Length: 217
Image (cartoon, rainbow, N blue to C red; front, top):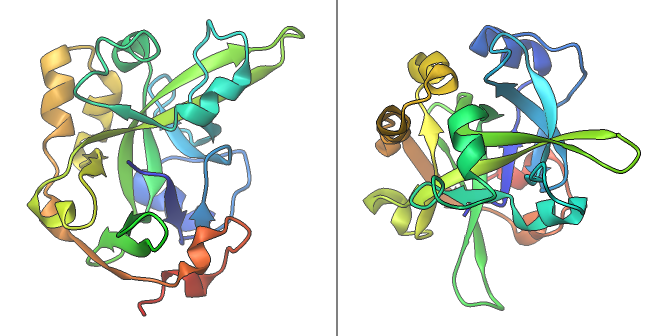
């Protein structure tokens, strides 16, 4: 799964990298957690960056708390699951990141690892998004990160890995409605570009959010 990630570049760098702009402010974040509002590019406005809440809330849900359990969606079952099957066809998104954390080891002694591209550049998680309204018609736009079975390299840390979208396929990912094409794009990224190392267990607490969290130990 993917339960924590980072964006260590500033807003200007993010906008330049993905040729998209944002009317909302956001800053570097070294310990992104579910329920945070985060920079995301959605399919109906590919030149804009919006802040969406991490944790998908299906439009039919009576309670927004369901989003706490919807931070990831498995690519293997996403076209069948009631919570995801409409979103994967109609509401895909690209979630901006430049690294993520994963834990390895026994339950009470898990070691966190930081996983990122070798050049530590920005990249895009494949995601889905939804719009939800409460009883007072207040709107929450939310997203889930798509995951798949980990390849050989990252399977040494965890059995799942987030789907990463190649930058040159961003517009195709956002625009296609074809089941086979969606799966093809989700499989196109070369995960050998990633590297990883152990980091401090300080990252375990969402209260900690500083540059030292991504330092190798």
